[in-house]
Image (spheres, helix red, strand yellow):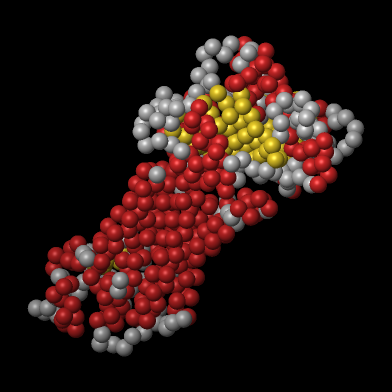
Amino acid sequence: FLFQLVWLGLNVFLFWWYYLAYDIPPKFFYTRILLGRALALARAPAACLNFNCMLILLPVCRNLLSFLRGSSACCSTRVRRQLDRNLTFHKMVAWMIALHTAIHTIAHLFNVEWSVQARVEEKGTLAAVLSSLGDNPNESYINFFRKTIGNPVGGLYVAFTYLAGLTGVIITLALILIITSSTKTIRRSYFEVFWYTHHLFVIFFIGLVIHGAGRIVRGQTAASLAEHNPEICYKNFTHWGKKGACPIPQFSGNPPMTWKWVVGPMFLYLCERLVRFWRSQQKVVITKVVIHPFKTIELQMMKKGFKMEVGQYIFVKCPAVSKLEWHPFTLTSAPEEDYFSIHIRIVGDWTEGLFNACGCDKQEFQEAWKLPKIAVDGPFGTASEDVFSYETVMLVGAGIGVTPFASVLKSVWYKYCHDATNLKLKKIYFYWLCRDTHAFEWFADLLQSLEAQMQERNNADFLSYNIYLTGWDESQATHFVMHHEEEKDVITGLKQKTLYGRPNWENEFKTIAGKHPGSRIGVFLCGPEGLADTLNKQSISNSEADPRGVHFIFNKENF
């Protein structure tokens, strides 16, 4: 929250500072005569646009963030939690860019209209005299529009023939396409549209850098101000240049400044893309493809030098499906295993294409050499890496969102198989919410292994898991009732029975807070935004004001 407040404060400061910089100084006195307050209203958001365009690329430099996350491991978890909110900040900056673009564009529409109108205005007014400057030798112009064409033709002429106008139209259209295709509906249902339109950022940044090269915003030069005080001389504008009167004012355009703001982040992002390209060229071998129920496949892979931590994710590209598309997937394997794996639910064109490319649509056994080539970028850090930094954690997964916790629970199992004496983590509360009984099947084996392992070690209380079935029909309900008294659950085969409906989160948090007074409890979620809001509110409301009391620290997977 503090970081966001600082960012908002800087936006307000820059807007006000640059508004005053164009609304008060005598340098722009005559420019204000032509354009009025629209001058300052155009330049202030332009400064904020430079600032936010400097920031927009940094949250998506995944390798840079992973490096920073690793280098801050010795610090408090607050630094890493801020880095984990990179995509949230990226979206906030994008909306701020959209806001300032709207203000900047509307203000310049007025500026263009008044500049064009001033060129065809009747002679004898100050605006007409100022607009005519530059028509004669040894004069410099203040009005960038040099034609004598009225509106609306003049305005269209500026928009499509001037560098500032043409680049402004292009980058505004690019921004509209990027933002409208970034909605949750488009991302989930038409990911390809989101993916390709997002790469219009290249055109956006090129247009942004050269947008100010035309220098259409002009002010009086310092040398001219020394001999021509506009606040006095404007009264006698009809006598400018005559003997004993004020000399004709001279003007120059503002040099382009945007490149100074964005060149650093653009260089970092270029390095980021080069690192991604280099990593994507490294050979990846698919060692096994497992078809799970509920339209889910598991890819087990190997790659030379690949090292991971629990809860991390990778980006995957399958050239046989698409040569350009990269998709993020959480790693479901543990660091202790000699391979890394991901679970993919078949929900769209790309995942369907991968499903077919791996031969999962065929009945016969697929030879390893027939499996498609895969490119992998990563792994990258997430909030789940901090699970082992707490003594008590709540892990909440919804549907396929359970995947990061598969890695966590596998790693716990391996640690208990070898030596868990150095393990800081003492208690796990695991919640899994699913709408369909088939979704439990691929994950139940892992829970059964963990359950047996903890009982062998006389530490059955280490893991408390609650599996919730949120959707069922009448025939399933009858089946559940008939087998309710059996020792093991009819769905999962676990001793812990499946629960029906949704958790009462307020009761869950209060119960856990009562069992662990004075503790810092990590709450980790991989699931929908609605559930995230609920858990975040419960984490805040159930944390005590006393620093020595219980505190719930909410963390959400973002990729």
